[in-house]
Image (cartoon, rainbow, N blue to C red; front, top):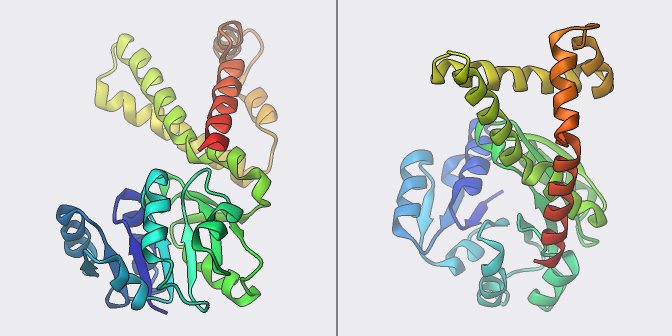
Length: 264
């Protein structure tokens, strides 16, 4: 299989890195197009892939194409490439708000499409990706695309109606987590801990806690209760978080994120 990217930014780099590292597709079978020479040269040097400034070259030389440009450029890029896209090619999208119906309308013909929503932890092989194939994809093609997506983290097939929820719960949520880690580190610094060490303690605590949720199968509330000893320090910290509206703030932020995704 030949793999092509239109756009060579951070998310494209994460996907390239995972696919090449796991030897799913060799670097010499991957091509990336970018209007910015600096972007092209960066991935060429980092991954040893082929690069070009011509989107048509990517379409004409690839079996699978990943549209990794920003959502606001999707209509423009699709208008440029749609006449070159063949019925046997697979298009993978990573743009919030761009539905399968909208994509089909833009291409103006039947095209094999998998709508996905990865997140930035893909950069370290720990991504979470939602995938939604359209009706023109075969079971074998879907399985192959999932193999590509699994190269940089976990992947789940979901109904398209949940895609905007995915944007809020995993696509955008690394930003919330980074803010949480930063806030915990700030508090640790105020307690006298050096800044670099504070980030290590806070980040590892978040990483370990997430791993407990995934690997124990226990409800997060049960795991929280395991930390909260009677009359202890943790339950007092939890009480303050509840008093300050911690849960409500997270929920309201995510609902806002979801609504913005729907409007894109």
